[in-house]
Amino acid sequence: MAKRLLLLGGGGHCRSVADSLLADGRYDEIGIVDYDTEANVADLPVVGNDEDLPSLFADGWEEAFVAVGSVGNVSLRRKLFEKIKAVGFSIPHIIDPTAAIARDAVIGEGVYIGKRAVVNAKAEVESFAIINSGAIVEHDVFIDAFTHVSPGATICGEAKIGWNTHIGAAAVVKQGVSIGSNVIIGAGSVVLKDIPDFVKAYGNPCKVVESCQ
Ligand code: JB3
Image 1 (cartoon, rainbow, N blue to C red):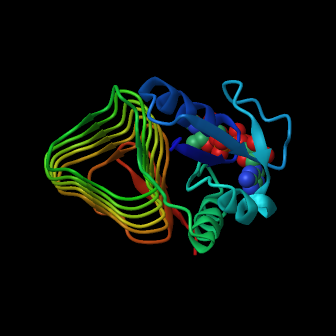
Image 2: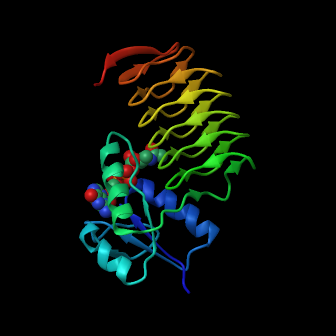
Image 3: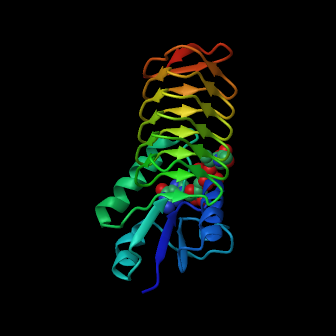
């Protein structure tokens, strides 16, 4: 039977996800689900919008994946993952074929790992996280659900990153440091000390600049 996957949200992040899938070739058919019928993702067809998900499932689309990114809008990703779960779709994780994943790393459902990203030994990446292009998640790191590690960020060994946190592009997190949940770390920051929940922090060395409760 043909293997078919729906990608929800046909924008910039989806173009990265689709390219990883097309390079890997494991699906016979990929459809985009978006309200924008002109969404332009690698010439893939827009097969419907969120209201059509139950009928698409009934028509034999068994797998779905949320392909909107999380810059400033994690709640949409969460809402869409809840929707596809409720309909009954299987949710894969998608790993670009150029990514390097250790044999004993643990990767949850709905995770995307982009081009040339590294997830090293015994690291854990929980459900629905994004490890974007060229990011490095070192050995024994824990990345909690819905967290986004942006392109080129480096998370050194044994660091822990909480739930729903955004690590900006090219940020560096020192080994063993813990960053809380619902945190935004600015691009290029160098995080040398622990960061609590619900804050925005940036700089080198990275400092808390405001609360975002
Ligand atoms: O920085 C990098 C490497 N990537 C960014 C990524 C993480 O986040 C990228 O540069 C973008 O800034 C951003 O990408 P994303 O999330 O794909 O955003 P955008 O390019 O604006 O595309 C969002 C798409 O989702 C659009 O096609 C919208 O029409 C669609 N959309 C919005 N709301 C929705 C919904 N689609 C569905 N199915 N349901 C919705 O509720």
